[in-house]
Length: 295
Image (cartoon, rainbow, N blue to C red; front, top):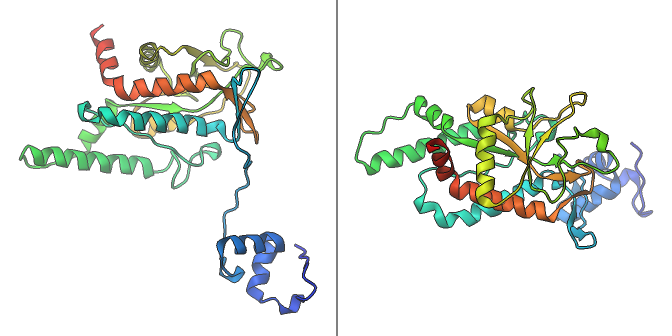
């Protein structure tokens, strides 16, 4: 790497060797900028992770401002509405017999095999520790001897449900051949249940039935997406969670354009549908499943 020195008063031989190392790795101007922003000497920067992203604000587009244009909609859109719904649900927490979670993972686009990814041990380990703490507290309240075993945690997992909320490829008017005619996710027409016979998505008919009932109660329309059989199918964390923890998992999303581009597009109505769906799921899942079983 060649290094350019813009300050004529500073000669290459006058720069300490440790500063030259970071200059060579980052380039002089970027190294100076990071040093200035952090308020540290360049020689104190041992190593770094550098991520570049679009820093423009999200905005509304369209004749009726019906579209959201933003960076990283995949998958901050799901994270936003999920977090909003979970916070709003805290008012009902004293009446619930189950525990609501929101897990947001790194590294999904590169396979999830990392310390903080869904294919690591972090989520399962902490889920079990939370269960252990909750079960211990319940036992102490009943003045009984606490005797936790792994079978109880596995039984809890088998009674649980995970929604893998990722975005979905909307049917683009210029590339309609990319979708099956009967399974095109359209903007402003609700959340998308994602199905794949090779289980690249974790959805099955039982889980899909639960999603449809939750959506009906939330007055949210539902679409179904199945990728063309002659096209490759991406995956989500859904099959990973289902396979590692034995928890029934359903893959859903909302349509968007330009997935993985620096700027992405989705529908305002679909974000509202998404939010309403999650609020109903967090607050009414137990009753929903109970009613389905009775029927």
